[in-house]
Length: 216
Ligand SMILES: [Zn+2]
Image (cartoon, protein in one colour):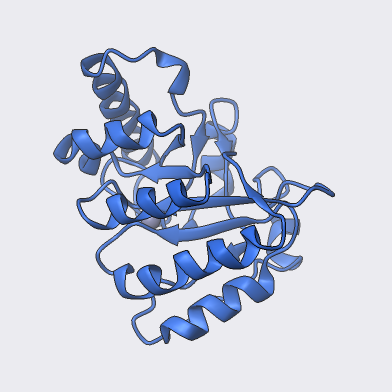
């Protein structure tokens, strides 16, 4: 499968306006979970994070928020942060710009409506956006950059890769992690097998070495 686990230094240089890492000397890791909320998998993630008093950022798909409002509420109740991952998980390279922007706004609206129904203040409104598949054009960045911090990653766990062995997923993700790294996991059915193996061990590995896990 064509992806690299570490964003390296080349790609971020072409997209310096996007967030790839949070430079720091502190032992802190920024875990992110894309594509939820969904039953079972998101709930598994929340349980694991809770065990380590870990906070994370969830880049939610608006349509999943509409379908699973109770799980979305649980993410917020446990003190995690949310971000926008479009309403239908669409690819910025394959859609007209206006269609793309509308889909992002639709996700914001799903978030706003859920917050209203949950009687929560709007302080949690996402000012974070992550493009599905990491695909976004410079023109789209121009349009979105004033409204959102556009968050990419330092390390892709590859949990979605069904050909990747769970142990390899874990080892590569640990290997590429450094202070201030932004890590991508997926709370999705597709990633479940690798995620359920790798996440508890990943948390244990870094927690036992004095790292903390924070929201972006
Ligand atoms: Zn995604």
